[in-house]
Length: 186
Ligand SMILES: O=P(O)(O)OC[C@H]1O[C@H](OP(=O)(O)OP(=O)(O)O)[C@H](O)[C@@H]1O
Ligand SMILES: Nc1ncnc2[nH]cnc12
Image (cartoon, rainbow, N blue to C red):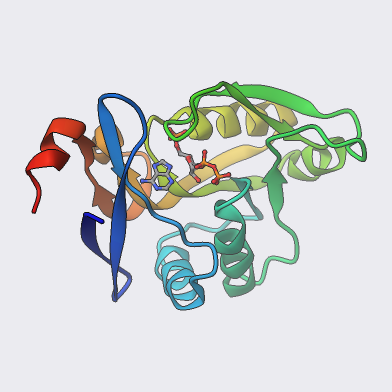
């Protein structure tokens, strides 16, 4: 398998290059299960955040990261926007998302209790990767609707066009690959 090698918070990882459609491939970054990397990335991001009251992310890969970040920042509660409305959710606020990794439109939903918790709080939006920016935009809309104040946006990796974003703190950058480009890699 072709891989892309990247350094993140002092750790080297060899990411498999995966075709996502007829034109594009991504270097797939899956932090689920990677304890050392999650801990180091959380520590590195924590140093660059202003004073905040609560972190929010989108499920699923952002969850271990904000858990670890919340521990660092001594924040007792964090908020996760879900990709499905569960029966146990109360009056959810919903926004559509078209993430680069998923062909179909998805949704992000915030439970009423979590939305109420964000109200008037200083909120940092956190994700593992920001690529098209669609997930970030949906999270921004949810936080605004909930009455939270977005004071920081941070992720481990920015990808593709998002590498030029000035509004997101990040630890490193990932390229997008055309499939023709991938054919030429050894
Ligand atoms: O900037 P975007 O194009 O929206 O892409 C970024 C999103 O893609 C990934 O989630 P993914 O859709 O792979 O879902 P998962 O975390 O549930 O695996 C990542 O965790 C971000 O949330
Ligand atoms: N390269 C990547 N790896 C994992 N998830 C992603 N979401 C967007 N880009 C991604």
